[in-house]
Length: 165
Image (cartoon, rainbow, N blue to C red; front, side, top):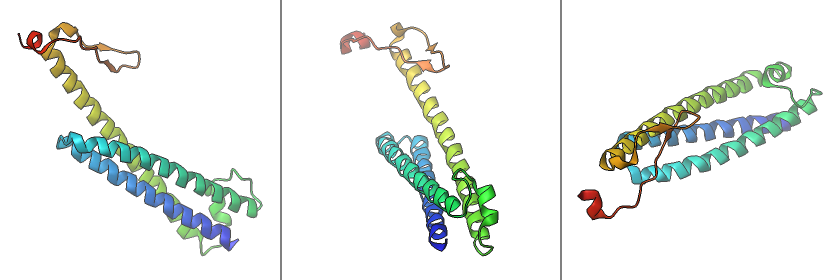
């Protein structure tokens, strides 16, 4: 059982590390939006997408070790940590509980930061659309899609002379 338990603990630590990496990337992205560093912003989007895949892999691995440990303890594979921790050896319960709590806490922070960044980026996009519409008023008024998002009207091709004159 020690091997199954150690694998689960290591996978919980790895998942925690990956959530920390994501939070750092989201903080970096937020700073770039605020400082209007658009060139670097595109790189953070790619890094965030890659980190999402890494988190997904770490979570799947942790879930696999969790299922293996539950099966080894004679519990259903779908057993959650609330039911799993009490049947662990007493020396391991505080560690596993703390890792699970930290993972949940960090995941909540990642989700909150992602929502904040989404709002910042949406607001920046709206401001850019207003600027474009003020430069090219023939594009019409702001319209919204079924989900409440702003639709970006297509810009009619114009020569520079027509746009300036």
